[in-house]
Image 1 (cartoon, rainbow, N blue to C red):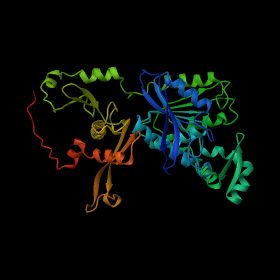
Image 2: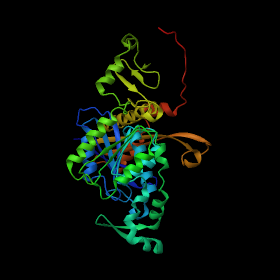
Image 3: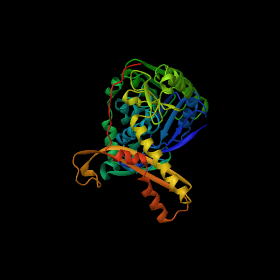
Image 4: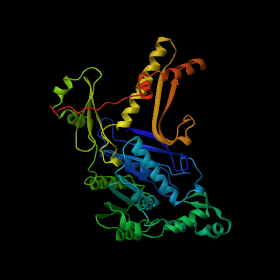
Amino acid sequence: MPRQKVTFDNAQGQQLAGLMETPAEGSVIRSYALFAHCFTCGKDIAAASRISRALTKHGIAVFRFDFTGLGNSDGDFGNTNFSSNVDDLLAATAMMERDFKAPQLLIGHSLGGAAILSAVDRMPSIKALATIGAPATADHVQHLFTGSQSELETNGKAEVNIGGRKFNVQKQLLDDLRAHADVEHIGHLRRPLMVFHSPIDNIVSIDEAARIYKAAKHPKSFISLDHADHMLSKAADAEFVAQTLASWADRYLDDAPLDSDEAVQLTMSENVPALVKTLEHGEVLVTEKDQKFLRGLYTEDHHVLSDEPVSFGGRNLGPSPYDLLLMALGSCTSMTIRMYANHKKIPLEDINVRLKHERIHTDDCADCEGQSGKIERITRDIELKGDLTEAQRKRLIEIADRCPVHRTLENDLVVRTREQPWE
């Protein structure tokens, strides 16, 4: 089953490690989910792995990651707290929206469940959420520090034993947990909620599930995980959660992306062949596919889709206009470098070009002398693979600026707009 290691930065610029679990190769990804694991756990705990794998069988790709200071993620656990976990969830959501698709389903196990309940009001793409063995509020975890509370209050830090592992924590963690003791936010979720909990959970009492369910407004559902332990250590229990969750969430994940065959059918559904035949070399045709953002892009020989991300009101069925602009510059850059390397017989094995568009203030731009106010900047990073001399590398980077698209963008380009009669 396809897995992809993913890294991204949190709000403090520290790199967090995650894993994207996707359906089998050739299968359609209907939607994306974000999974938040339990306190001090990592992304690879059995419950998270099993539920993620089971959900992929239903066309749901699942991203899970190590919170700051845990697993393979950077940072010091002692400097984290519940609020930083919520911030990490928001950073993961932003990464998914940028690099994959915005998540529609949010899943939280144990304290991860409390975290998603607190974070979801800042996640507009989420259409449904589920908690598994979760406390209603973060302050529930205070009991883990009972033996060290006096030392934490006196010294501001202490070594605590949680689940057989030792962690250095600071008093700010305890203070932050105490600050999250109110269930009022659960009444403002404005999303369908599923609560999974075991009646014999000896880590988080089922009374916590009752607090969540009572505070939440409809639509809400509760599933009792008979005979399951807190960690869902039995594979059958994790499978049951995934099967039930997928069936329940199906009615809410209504903006699932089209698969490639459907996209092609949509692209060709309009009567455009006659118009395409009139295109001259160097011309393109852009048609509407819906009355929002989806567009068909045609040349004489090719057709693709363009769209906007879900968070902008689109369906994310194709690159955005700015994505296409960067792709045009990047592909032209790569082609230009390759042509020069081949001509000069430079042993260049491969090229990667990464581009980013941003609007910045000139005060933050070292290359913007003489300009003022806001400007637009494209950053182009080029990776060259091969046994190249420093002189060859320098020359290839110089050649990148000779890319025709680059020159067009930097020249005094004039765009002339004309109205044509509808045919």
